[in-house]
Image (cartoon, rainbow over all chains, first blue to last red):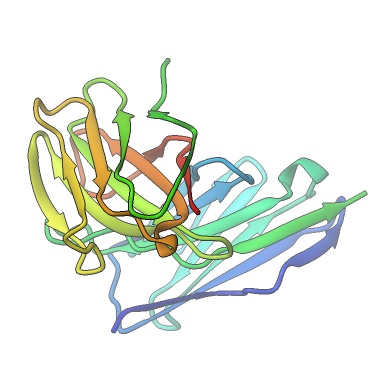
Length: 113
Length: 115
């Protein structure tokens, strides 16, 4: 069955450093992969989408990579700030009509001053 | 710009009672999704509508759960004979016409507590 793995342990980093979060998937061939941010008590918020033919995508301080050979996506936040503290969810998708968006368990990021 | 609206934000009920949640998607978004999320887990897919048609329903969704989207606008999720295991955050999301499953816009959710 399809499996999406994200680091279950919280990632604690110091302000100004680069945070790197990992998303691994098995038994799955996604056409694209999305990353969402979720704050406590709120719904997820879409951040970035990367397609299988794209190796890397950037948006301001965010960078996402997608390696279909390793079946892995990396999510980087450069110059991290305490306001970046949240849970980050990855969601690969094949984008087919019968497909549903499946989320990983998320990784909680804590940026301390 | 009004986002996805969910009501109520919180619901406390006794085991065995029925509850109904409402979701108002972003206008002109033809796709609407319901997810359930428990603490420490990612959102878990429940069901999905395209306009008024319910196109998929998770096998995890027991017969006690039913969702409707009668006019292709707002949607309701009803849980009958609630159980303590139903306690979770119920999230609604919508997405505009275009590629499937891209860029879901989530509401703030309804937190259900079954006592």
